[in-house]
Structure formats: structure tokens, C-alpha cells
Length: 294
Image (tube, rainbow, N blue to C red; front, top):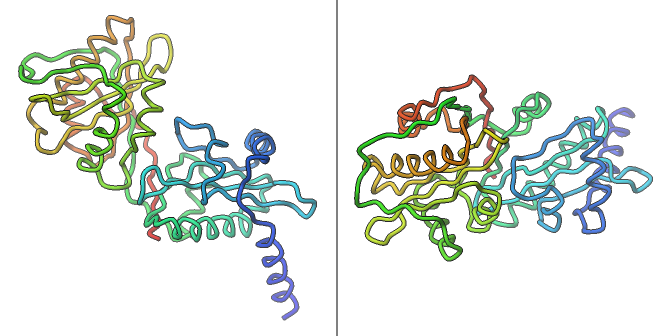
């Protein structure tokens, strides 16, 4: 009984050391991310500390008031939130502190009308912990690569490809909501941030209506990464995706890029068929997608 009592007291004391991250914590959190024993950073256009101020970003402090662990999750857009960062300073925190952070983040997210929490990670510690925290693996992401950029003939002539404009982003977010399940949608703000770091960001129009878009970023001096291609369901199979990739790959070739990579869900067979036509092949790199229903 005494052991149980001490354990309960320890958990209660640890829970009292949780609080929302504040702007003044930015420097300490940045140093924690650099020195953490266990670390997760979501692939994101924002810096980790940019999520400070969102309800799902909590820190844990030691008995001396020093931040020694944190976990941040945010929806962009609703209703699915992604875990954006997690850091634990010691191995002993992998049990109680991690669980308390996660459960309190979940509570905060529920209050923000988040219905699903997702996590993408290649870290062994994450993938070992999540099955014990009400997460289920819902998908896998696989990396594809093409070592030679090629283009295809026969794309539809009524498709107009042009560079994206600032006024387009609300329409692109609407297109995302039509084309994808909530877990995969990008917001207008997220797409704008991607645009600022893109090599190419193009939209496809039919009769002056945006029906698709793609954007790519630089990996190194000769390599690029296809970040996103979204096609309206009504025009899928009509050559729109082919036209977008033809245009993008032609421009990338002219700019000296010779290698391109991309990520896709293992169950997204239509996209894989399109990528195979352009010479993409799976690299064997796969990453699990975890989700917890809230």
C-alpha cells in the first residue's frame, strides 16, 4: 500500500508541473530540442516555437522550475491535429511524464473541437510508445524517387497551367477539403508558407476554374522534392495531374535539377500509377501514420 501511495503522490506532483508553453519559454524550449534524450519534430514549414500559444503546446518543469520536457500538437486545419514536437530530457520521463503530457494535450485539443490526433515519426521511441497510448496505425507513407526527370505526351489541351497567386490560396484550401480526408488536408496558411519556400508552385485551370495544383521544393543543388499535388475528384483521370507534372518537371530540368523525390500513402494507387508513368519507383523507406480518435 505504501508503494501505491508514493506512486500516486509522485504522479500528482508531476501533473502539477505541467503548464502551457509561453512566449518567454522560446529560448529554453529551443535548447531542450537541441539536447533532448528523446525528440520528435514534425516536418513543417513553421519553426517548433512558432506553435507556442496554441492550446495543445504544454511544457513540464522540474522541481526547480526548469523546463525539462514538452509536447505540442495543433490542427491546421481542423478537425485533425498533428503532433508537431515532443522532447524529453531523460529516459525516465518516457513513462509518467510523457503520458501526462500527452493526456493533457488531448484534453486541450478536445476543447478546441479537434476530433483526431495524428503522429508521423520514424523514431523508434515514438513508434514503441504510441500503441500503449490509444493510437492505432492507420496508414504508411512511402518515399518514391526518380533519378531521371521525364515528360509525357498527350496531355489535355484545355488545361491552363500558371504560377499560383496570393488570391488563390483560399480556393486551394477549399480544393484540399474536397479532395482529401481531414487527416491529409492543408490550410490556406500552410500552403502560403510552402509557397514561400517552393521552387515551383503551379495551379491548373479548366474554364478559368482552379482544378488542381502542385508545388516542389529544393533538396540540394541537383535534387527537388514534390511536396504536394492535389487534383479535384471531378477531373481525376483526365490528364490534369499529368499536365501539372509535365510543366513542373520541364521547368525543373531547365533549372538543372536531375533528381526528384516524393512521399505518398501506400494505399493511394491512383497517385502511384501517375508517378510510375513519370519514372518514379519506391525507395523502400516507409513511415507509419498513427492516429488517436478524440
